[in-house]
Length: 165
Image 1 (tube, rainbow, N blue to C red):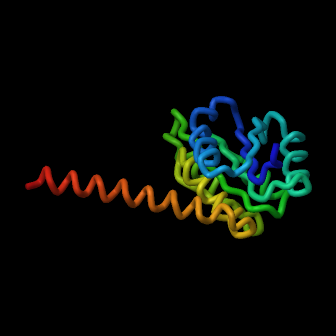
Image 2: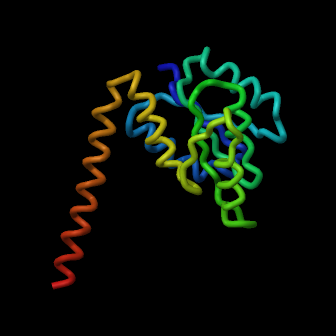
């Protein structure tokens, strides 16, 4: 088993369905990762322990997914020098705007890169782009993925133009 380079931390098991999008991308790109469920509010000691030990365990980027108050990414960022990417999770209360603002509005010195509400796929791609700076073997996989996206858009454009005629 290869040691994980990316850590994914969920604030709640209810976030699993969203985070599975990140899992799929990382599996497609063959990037080793680990996933944990740790709440910044209900298990703060576990959040602390995870964040302060991540770098020494070989983790290079941490993705944090949380909803509502969504303090997880900020707490983790405050405890490590590793890049932290926040995924704000959609909520029934405010549609995820609560999560988005809680994740993106960090004080100076506590940076959290933040993707869109429920943006697990982009979080995984961004984390892989960061990891690829040190591990160039992932760069061609990212290029292939971008080419696949471009082909999909071109195919849709061709379909649209045929229908419009």
